[in-house]
Image 1 (cartoon, rainbow, N blue to C red):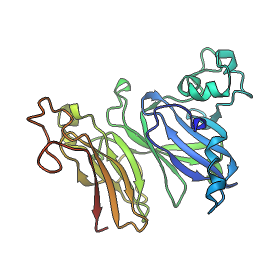
Image 2 (image 1 turned 120 degrees about the vertical axis):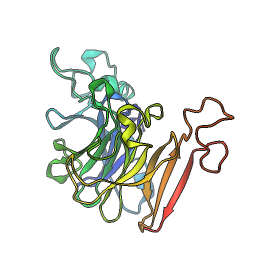
Image 3 (image 1 turned 60 degrees about the vertical axis):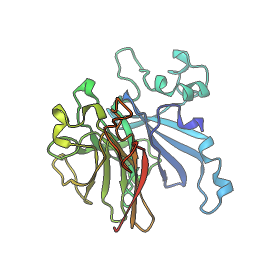
Length: 290
């Protein structure tokens, strides 16, 4: 589905707009890259799988301009900025998405897409429709701990082309987590966060206070850099917890444990033996009892 753009996707947050179109939010997991959303041409038909199969094959891709609170269409036919800068077609814009988002209308203008601090995940509050984005960090800008943005679409419509945003939670010692990576909501509307501090920096320097990567939750209604954050779990040595997801009844949480013992130099002396006391293995765990 090239209409989603060719970037380093680590996520896809999906919603249905007020007119029934499918909206897909994605981020580019790299320093100084952008956030995007795709709006389908067709509309979603509940229960009609065949009719929905092609919804991601035609529509429009937008890039977020946070300085203006607008979604800018990467529309080759109706915006000469692309042909004026060597793009040959709409397909060319979609394949070279990151380059297209870095273009400027005028020489001294900022790019049409706002560079962000590693947008790794986007999730949507199932009750309010607010869009939450995890920006992991960007050491080049002195953003060592990352933050979570909350985006509110104009008219509470995911098909809107204007939005407002705020920093919902900032990583750091004051909140107890750093480098937010993936997000999810539970059935009660609480926000769950897993973190992605680099294995080579865990328990050292400014990251020593956070120990290993972990899983956290923010009670419903919590907001602001000083909001309530509780740690739920700590990951194995030199791992990150990823892909949190609840079963529909909310009773089980799935977590993926990636690269335990990542900094191992000698395979005969691994820094982690998770999960079974032998060679470290990435795994998926199911936590029950909620």
